[in-house]
Image (cartoon, rainbow, N blue to C red):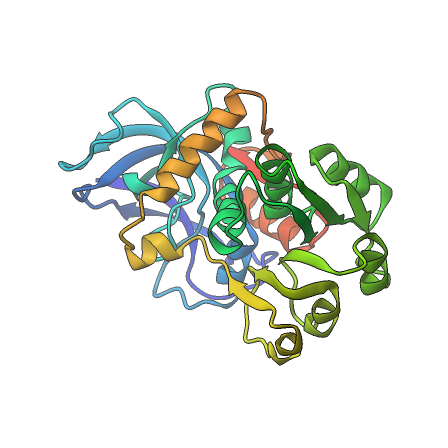
Length: 334
């Protein structure tokens, strides 16, 4: 079976017409737990631009993680879905990406598409919701009864925007501080549930300690490089930090306060085939429930069409610019 796919063969600037190109590729038959999904909408995440700019392609690599689509075929061990089901998911970086018309994905990392959202609005949610969920409940180990203060650095991005909403609904006694650099971004994070805002372009330590004099209990960061000295002052003794950007990091400044450092990578479960891999299916189902109940909203703020090499090149440039609030999504094929 063949399909149209968009990917890269060499690491080029997104402005270069050859940085993302369209090809016809072969789609293997579904494995035992695979769904063959007809992709309707995708989003572009920072991981996409990092891979295009710096990761070996291995010949021709198809990018894309978030996707919404319709199940067309299923593997012989599939139990969670049937052909015709509408689904959303974030895929895995050890398999071809979602920037193709027909895409294979393991059912255990797939959820049903929220019925109240359009395909493009649903496509904004999987990767960021999984990352935010795993940070709050797997890395930090928070529960409905948790009390304390959470600082979200990078709160206007996709993951931060999802985390704000999850904390608002599921962590009623956790006070949330969010970083925001201007009034528009302050309004965005406040709307999504932040009780306090701080400007990370100013004196972050002073601003945070003015709100939480003893230090915050938990700190999530999408931007940890060069920040650990400050974080060691912001986080209370025995507190925790979770980072999603890339290392290495010298965590020695955290030792005097016995602060725990976590890495969060939402691809760990599918890539490592962990025994609890189905937890991503279960959490996406919970996210779909919360959307349908009006407890979560899509974080899509920029919508583009169609899904093409040219449109994806433009989308990569916008994501690389670092000025987006929320998520950029694309729908439809030429």
